[in-house]
Image 1 (cartoon, helix red, strand yellow):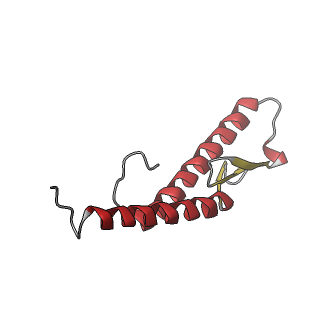
Image 2 (cartoon, one colour):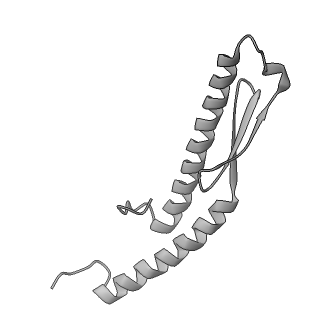
Length: 108
């Protein structure tokens, strides 16, 4: 029989179930939270939620230059990628609170 730290298999399964419930609740809460990122000194601002969905994009009209659409595209891309990274970081940080920093494969 395999020994598990802190007790038997039954206790471990209870802990895992408790952790799963906490994570499901946290996931719901994170889906409602939003992060924001900007580029070009605030010329482009992107908001994303905990589901890694883009919620809004705001573009300062002064940055819209028909002669330089490529710059605007780069600013949107940079702000979007940063918002998505922030969303992932927020998720990882909250997961870490529940898992105690344990890396559980397949969790997220």
